[in-house]
Length: 116
Image (cartoon, one colour):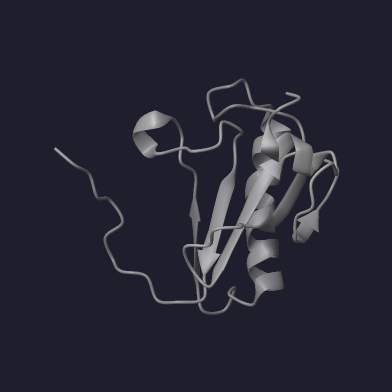
């Protein structure tokens, strides 16, 4: 997708603070972090969300990168969250599959908030 911001980052057309990368995924710090550590892991190829026929090897690469990112960012020992917002009701803001790795602060126990 030519106009997808995450595709542009994956192609090297936009600068990002890269944390980790391999042939299938790239991880970079979120520009609007919601925790002291907030890194995004994206597939290099465009998939809109989890339901977009994501190949098994890409899904595995996304999740395999999460503990590596946590170690690089120094939160592997203390703990971190791995989150995927999938679709409108989950508040997915960029329509390119991405995994959030967040840490560096104790999180509250509950993580589901919704409006009725």
